[in-house]
Image 1 (cartoon, each protein chain N blue to C red):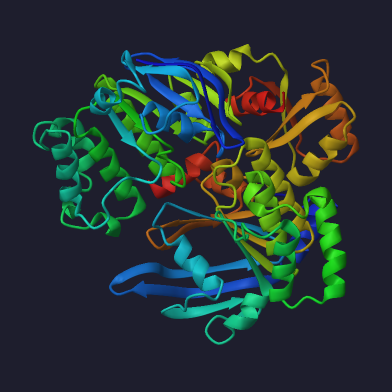
Image 2: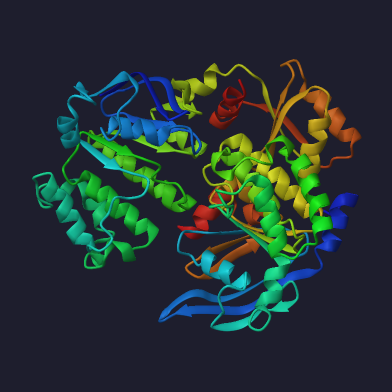
Length: 254
Length: 300
């Protein structure tokens, strides 16, 4: 990738700031090594694709980075905080969204936003302004008093993402956020991801859609607990002499 | 082998299927392609005699899904989305349970499942609940096949499965098809459509089209232009501002563009992007993919 345009240059300067650093991360469950000596950095504002076959150790690593599980050994810092001693600070500085969208089905759209804003300690004045802005952006103003349970999947997905970044975290973790949604909704969702990244939020995303791997700034591919490849999609395709990321993935994970 | 005529089904006020018709021929690999909530599972459950339609008719191998439900259950193998395995039985216990229920033995039909089952045989004493996702999938498939069904029905077998395992799973399906089994499979992954002989595209309870994947893309008359530049996000945004743009969507490493009409020339787009200082620009017309067609049909 050349640094020819101003945008590209700017993005790369932001990308000099490390937001996640992982050194020699090991996680064992009994005699089974789920994460085998992982070392990588993620930069501010980056869209970082975290790929791997089922059972490769992605979820284990993701849980550690979110402060939900302690590593067996290794050094990990997330948003500048230590993964062993400062997990609560980490949780305040990250957002998380899974495929199961952690929204409360029996609360309305507005109530869900209020709940999350409350949990993250956002003042009521700020909350009102931000909520109005969010509902406007998602074109959900007229639907704000509807229960989550009856909403189309695409709405739930957009809302779950917006709620996950409502407290303006430094990093948002997305665990297979687009599974099962229709092709248009899936692409609209990536518009939101791009927008968040351009606002300086680091996006750490797992997916099984290989076309989505192409949308990431950099991609890591795990196999059997190890990171087997980590680079930009363009460089990975070059290195593995592959037409697309699907071919890269299959060469590494098969 | 499967005939569906004007099937409709509602749950209270929600209409799940609206006047669905399709036909699956013997020994065909038929794909039901659509997102979550499209009605795929409802249709499969009706065909598997587990749910009654509100109206319409469906037959499997000439047997009616409402009146001949007992006979149908003997000739179909069904793998639901959440595998119907007994979590507290071991791998081999699950298999022999399903064989016994259908009045057969594991030995009698072992040939059919050999290629799949040998991969999990080393773990045959392990409880199903303790298996990895991939192994559960192989066991569930073995259990669905152990009574040697004429038709295999699989509800989203590859959802949440990684790209490598998905590829391997489709290779298994192809092998089963070669043994003469008719396969009816649903998936939300558009790229799997090309692996089927025939597909039905389904969205919001309606069939958008039924045909071979090749015919579906050939019938599509719109001009698709794909583009690439060094800055993909800016490229998408700039193209959406282009006054003759109708739809602009990311497609992996490219952007697919359709104009307000098909007279939009590649040279116009080239010029437009050059003015906006895009570097390493590629603009070319391409034949549509299934996903292009699906997205276009969705909007109508």
